Amino acid sequence: MFYISKMLWGLAQPATLLIVLIVVGAILLGTRYQRAGRRVVIAAAVLGVVGGFLPLSTWLILPLEDRFPRADLAGRPIDGIVVLGGAEDARVAAGRSTHALNMSAERMTEAAALARRYPKARIVFTGGSSKVFSEPAFEADAAGRILRDLGVDDTHLLLDRRARNTSENALFAKQLAAPGPASAGCSSPRPGTCRVRWACSVKPDSTSRRGRAIIAPPGPPTHGCSSTRRPKVCAGWILR
Image: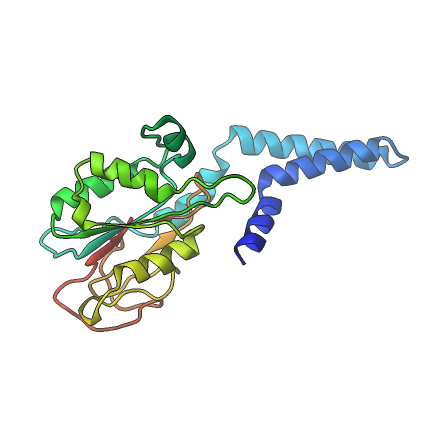
């Protein structure tokens, strides 16, 4: 399923669509359908300008990002923090023996800040390698070095090297954290919050294309939760 999704996503990307339109238009220009070819090339040019120079992706993702306000965690016990991969360049980090971060670096800095704020919480990082034709470089290895150097206690750090996409992030993070009955978790990566000691909320990330998790606000039980028990507080696990 991973390989199928990888192939389909490669075909569904806007950049791929533009390349297909340009190639089709160029082919048509050499035939008797020159008028149709010019229209296809012009359409590709317009889409390229709109997508390249206007913040179109921001406009599309903003309503989804604003759907989940930042949670107020003051005074609430936190059992753990889940960090999704995508903030680190594992290949550069392995090749240069140094830290390499991208525009999603706040995942690492927020995880370190929350680890200091909640020193008893476990930090679960989930991220493997999505490479198909090249030698894999695992995100968990690079993230582990970053988090340790940022001061995260190694005894509280759990690393998952298997996940290759956001769906597997949610699946393997739950398996690695092994929540007990008192801190029931989410059984689905669909957006939602649980009034339990785990909070799971995953949303797409227009920059990394892997999906980004946010701190889920407290609220009544919704879809994706494996339990509706109500301990003292909610959002006990943070998926970041």
